[in-house]
Image 1 (cartoon, rainbow, N blue to C red):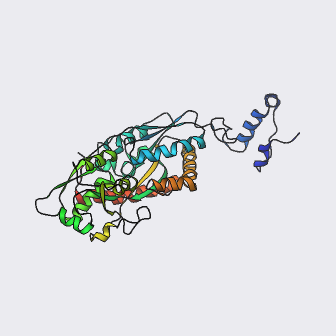
Image 2: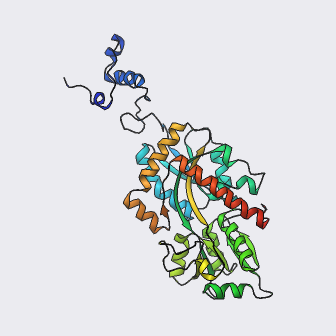
Image 3: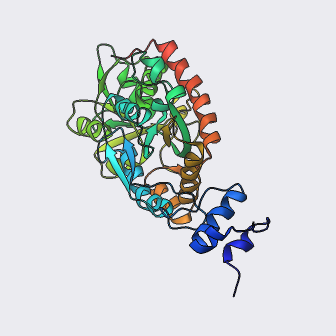
Length: 349
């Protein structure tokens, strides 16, 4: 009889199998073998030999913004391939509000072992710095899983103001002119970026927070607001349709995501580098082996050519990191965004 295929995958010899285990057949033998090799027991949940028996139930991927928002689109793009990789359904659950912090808090406090969150910069960096009353701490209550993708923001304007950068800012600085700008919430990168632009350009503008970027766009189209910083994937369809004007991007140079849109630096406001990103995080209590399993799956998924192109079409440059890579980005962005908060005196409302 042929030897079990599992034997050839390991360099250690098969242990002697006691009589009770021989009576229970190959399944018991494999469990003992895995234990002797220092491996997790063979699991059935994902349907792949050698994989630990997790997840054992459907996974929740919580998003802090409404359906149709950029994080929501990313989450729904990843849900099916992630389910295939892990062997359990992945259900996207929207919990909008507080710039994504309501959802982030629910992830931080989840105790079911099967809850993850797709989050933006602010949820994983300066949430507690901006508002000490935030019901979770990104550093102590959440565990990094993977940085998925990054993008600059596009400064867009409602139709009417000049659509060339220098002329736009000159018009915005006119005496007595006060425009409104919309964001998906206090403390989001769009909010901090606009406050930085105000300081750089001298324009007066009033912040109008919304539940998410789809509502920000509606405010622009309805002329309740005059400008906003939006992800490329949401901004450019409106620009190409002639409904909004693209003034510039928050990068030191042009981006392959929006090659026809100049940088804000070209509008004469000096170096301006600010990115948004989407990442997956888990409750701090989730076992490291489970976090690594999700990170491995996500990294493989986003780096596939078809998925890379799909995310690019949505306005994202794929990254795909291990947990350590996301942890380093969190540290860097916490420093950058905290500095903007301090200099501009931004406080949670």
